[in-house]
Structures are given as C-alpha cells and as structure tokens.
Image 1 (cartoon, rainbow, N blue to C red):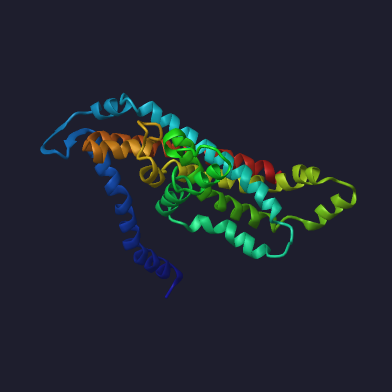
Image 2 (cartoon, rainbow, N blue to C red):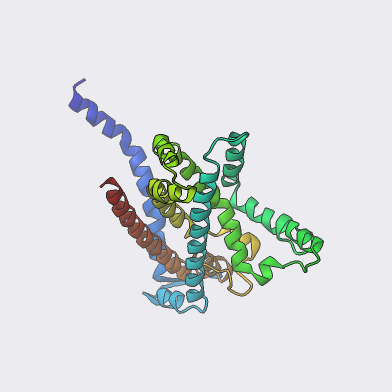
Length: 293
C-alpha cells in the first residue's frame, strides 16, 4: 500500500470518531443556543415561544447575578492564592530527602483523588459540624465557642474545601518540577554562603515560574465550574452568599424551571470560561517566552 493510500485509509478510519466527537460537542451547544432565545418553562412545556434576547436580559438583571460574579471571582482568586503559595512552600519542604519522604508525598497528593461530593460531605459533617465536628471539639477543648462555619462564614468554608481539594494538584506539579532543578547549582550557592531564603528567591522560584503558570491556568478553568461543593454544603446560601455562576444557572434551570434563562446563563458561563482561558493562555505564553530568553 502506498503512503498516500495509507494516509487516506487512516483518515477514513478516524472520521467516525471525529464526527461523534463533533456531534457530542455541537449538539448540546446548539440546543443551548436555541433555548436561550425561547421562553421554555418546564412547568408549561406547551407554551414555548420565541423571545429573542429577553432571557439574557432577565439573567443579567437577576438579583443574584452580580453577587454570583463576585463570589466566583473571590472563590477562584482565593483558591488560586492558597494552592499556589501553599503548594510552592510545601513542595520546597518535602523536596529535601528525609525518612518517609515517599509516604509523605503520597499522603499530600491523595486528597486530589477524592470526589468533590465526598470531600464536601467530609468537611461538612466530620470537620466543620458545629456540634460533633473536629473543629468544634478543638474549640470546646480550649474553652471557646464552636464556629458554625457554613452559617457564619459560608464562602470562606467553601473556599477551604475547594482549596483542600486542589492543593495536592499544585503540590504534584511543583514537586515534579523540582526534580529537574540543577542540584549542583544549589549546592554551589550553599557553599558560597547563600541563605535558604536567597536560594528560594533566586533559584527555586524562577525555576517554578512555568509550573506556576500551568497550575494557574488549569485550576482557574476548573474552578470556574465549581458546583458540587456548594450544592452539598451550603446550597448557595445563606441567601446567595455562596452562589456562583454555575449554581445560579442550576437555580434557574432546576429550581425555577426556567430553561430559557438557564440556557442564557449557560452561554454566559461558556463565554466567561473562554475569555479567562484565552487570557491565561496568552499570559502563560508570554511567561514561557520570557523564561526561554
């Protein structure tokens, strides 16, 4: 078989998978676009009608819209700050050889493999419960009043849960990156009298610039879609204190049964995620170019 015929055969064999993937992506998006310009309420499925951009206007003027935007920004920003800073510091601590290093690294990474729903239930019932939780036991032992975390500090509680889930991912990336760091350069700096802070600031941190950029990009994209942790712990409340954009879309679709407004919110979430992705890709591209120079 000639190379040209072989190439044509490979393309022919790949077409079904390509078409299936294309349909898997395009059909839901097309339906979302269609319903975003329709009045379609699950309680009155026979009364659908074309309404143009009214669903977008309704979603953007919804009382919780700007609160959801603010909560989304705070959630993403705070979790990124905790995971990047904490991930770098912990990775540096476990980079040097010590007894049980492999076990410690495994334990640090293991929370990343816990399902979001399971993690949220664990924190809600075993750690943050104001009566029987571990934190309540510590507060009671110290003579303090236990904190009702999800009632008094709802958004902070969700940030803690999500940061606990994503911190292992950052540690995994940073620990892997530190394995490729030039040890001889570090040893030479130590022999010249460089302090630990100087080595970290001038050698370790520049070496981790690219991994930090990758962690920020990957986490930011996924953190824009946080839902399970909020649904399980606070259900968006109290009020709308922990309502982010995905949860607001869920509220429109399955609590108010307004498929049209939910579809408009879904398209807004898609556009928001794409804008953030484009910004981060360009930012990382500049970082990698600067690092190569």
